[in-house]
Amino acid sequence: MKRVVVLGGGIGGTTVANRIRKALEGEVASGQVQVQLVDREGVHAYQPGYLMVVFEKMRPEETRRDESLLLHKSIQLVKGEVEKVDGAANKIVLKGGKDLPYDILVIASGSVIHPELTPGFVEGAHSFYDLENAQKLRGALHGFTGGKIVISVAGMPYKCPVAPLEVTFMLDDYLRNRGIRDKCEIHYTYPIPKVFGIDTVAQPMQRLMGERGITVHIPFNVDKIDPAAKSMKSVEGDTLPYDLLIAIPPHRGADFVGASGLGDKGNWIPTDRYSLKADGRENIFVLGDATNIPISKAGSTADYEAEVVTQNVASMVRGEAPTARYEGRVYCWIMTGLAQATYIKFDYLHPPHPPTPSFAHYWNKVIYNRTYWDLTARALF
Ligand SMILES: Cc1cc2nc3c(=O)[nH]c(=O)nc-3n(C[C@H](O)[C@H](O)[C@H](O)COP(=O)(O)OP(=O)(O)OC[C@H]3O[C@@H](n4cnc5c(N)ncnc54)[C@H](O)[C@@H]3O)c2cc1C
Image (cartoon, rainbow, N blue to C red; front, side, top):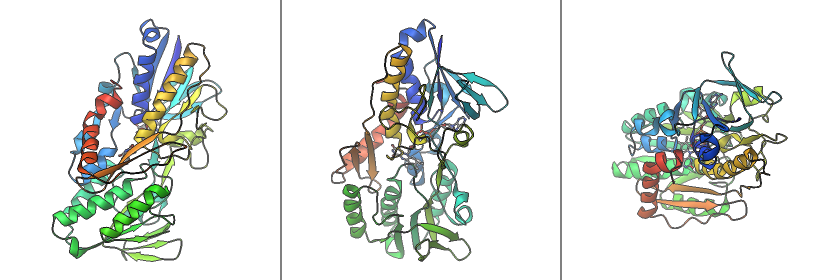
């Protein structure tokens, strides 16, 4: 029997486990292949929902599902914290000493937020990158009656690169709806000399910020936050005071990656951008935020990568060469207000050209959020 183990029950891990099971349906049914998924909590978090929670477009409980309800019944769910991957012995070591052997391993362990890496962040900044902080920010915005709101990114790379743009535009609409926009200033800072990493997106987004009266500070690399003075200092030497700070925390790969000798200094796993194999490993694939591939860390990236990993895993199980290639496909909506959006669609060779924001694009995002659990996570389409 061949064991395929998927590490991580988030967007990438859940969909890839279900797809592999489907691609190898006969082999799984006859007991030639076993698919297992190991996850720390056994609870699946739909993180794109956190931004919606801030603006009361989703309820907190709508962002979470029990992992066992999303996996096909033939996939074994193993709840446990992975301590390390022992590549030489083809096994995962779980905290508490249990081993999980594999023939093929798929790592989808995501990224970890580290607000403590920026001095003053924990005490001085609001964030929406986990459910608890998204709810706190929602409360803080409720109580906000006027002043200076700063949106900032405290380190790259971070997941969902468009999220700082989205929170900025949604906030602008939110303050207008409450009739207090004229009592507020919105300031947007970004670590590079443009408002987004891709030129064809940065230009229209910066234009939109100009139209909405949003002040831009670029480049602005956050050095430290002073919660008592309510101000933020940049590596470039600028000081920016705020009444309310919304910041994206620094990100790193999962700790076990370093402990397994699989990662770079940020614990991202060096991965072939086409085959999605971990560098130098024949039977380990990586997808989603965990890779070091210089492409958006996004749920849609993980979803497209899952198609490729599924084909390659199925080929290997059948003794064929894994030839499927990931061409860098990404698709992300960008909320440009509370009820309008645009989208970006691109790959390694073709940059995105976001269309004019509209209600229709927003509505497509709403539909996607509602169908996510069946179409993406359960891989039913
Ligand atoms: C506010 C916000 C908005 C976003 N909006 C969008 C959007 O609109 N569109 C989009 O495409 N993307 C969006 N994203 C990004 C998207 O959520 C991530 O890129 C995506 O979840 C990555 O999927 P993943 O499977 O790689 O990792 P994750 O979904 O983070 O899953 C990783 C899993 O691995 C498990 N794990 C990690 N380490 C261990 C361990 N040691 N032992 C056991 N289990 C472990 C974790 O518990 C987790 O279940 C957003 C993210 C945020 C925070």
